[in-house]
Image (cartoon, rainbow, N blue to C red; front, side, top):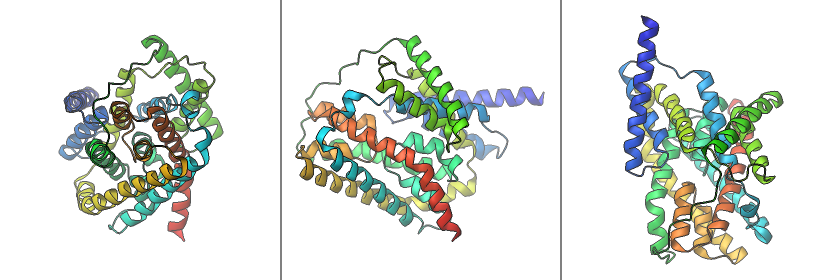
Length: 351
């Protein structure tokens, strides 16, 4: 009976997460499946503390799928758009990482936030990947998830306004054309192979968060060699992975952790605003150093909301290929450097 009740309990929470995700998707909330799972898990955790956990195997599978999703963003044609501007782009990417670290240390002014949690909460870009790996690297996954996606929401709302009012973008462009990609079955095969091989390599090589970084690197190599033929993670599989990550974060909430997040929000909002402005400044420097348009550089350096950035770039007539190249490069730098940053920050905390 206890086993049956636990199964029904878990099924009810998953169903609630799915329904919440669908409703949030209708409201055009980014990563709606993740938010839906987070809300369902949070409500369940506050109502019945400590009685439900996401199985480790489900979390590992979700990390692997998200890794493949990120790795599949890499294309030779896209990265080639950086071309002769690779050095300024790399410097701006490193500058974004430095800004993120500085913002994370400012967040530590709020009591109860560790150096790793502060840094991961403010890393600009790769919200889904950072959230998925946060717990494994010693950060408070709850704080990281809330603040990462708070920044994404702010950017999604303000970016089109800034692009139009500040950079003179027009909103009359067409919608992005659908890429010519293989079918669902090919995408599922691509996902399973990259996730499986990547997870094994990640475990054998003992890289931190190998369940995510291993599949990400394998998918990137498969894409760059042309073996994927443009295959992508099926939307249903990707949403299921986001749902699992959201549930994992949600069910670990307590009333005290929720109060801690609430107390951190005013300071976090101010720091996020400063981070967004700082990244816009890096965009101005990128435009000056490379000669690319100010709008292109602004969208390329916007700290988060990748798909919203690409939609804005396409609809405003900006160079979407260049924007995607810079965003993907930053995404990889942030995720690959995260384990090293976590180790360094934990070491400093002990000194």
